[in-house]
Image 1 (cartoon, one colour):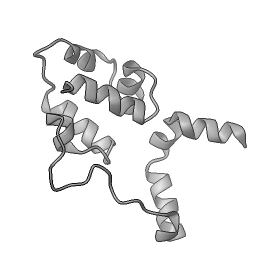
Image 2 (cartoon, one colour; image 1 turned 135 degrees about the horizontal axis):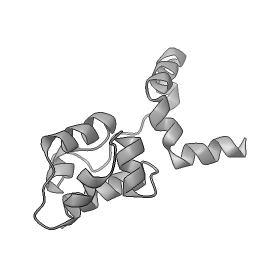
Image 3 (tube, helix red, strand yellow; image 1 turned 180 degrees about the vertical axis):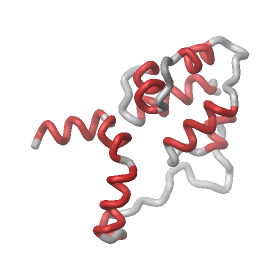
Amino acid sequence: MSTIYDRIIEIAKKEGYNNLTRFATKGLNYKSAEKLHRLKKAGNNPGFDIISDILEKFQDVDARWLITGQFQESESLTKPKLNLSDFSDLEIIEYLAKNYSRINSLATFKMLIRQQ
């Protein structure tokens, strides 16, 4: 079973951060990664602030999985896939504006922009 530290590393990688320090400072807007690095030591658990920050900034993270490492049995492991055509142009623009800093920090987004 993975530790909460392992799951935070997994979130960081999924969000395009190549290390925990960048995830802490850019993704969570912490001054340093110390709060997260201390979780590597066995027995250290995160405070509510860390859990809350991750869940607020990365809304696709399952809270139960983050805390326990387990998904709820009734939930599928993946969320239903949506297509851009499911949304109006205004909804897409509003989402992009609201999440600009997060989207701009994703490595995949940066690679896509460089290719164009």
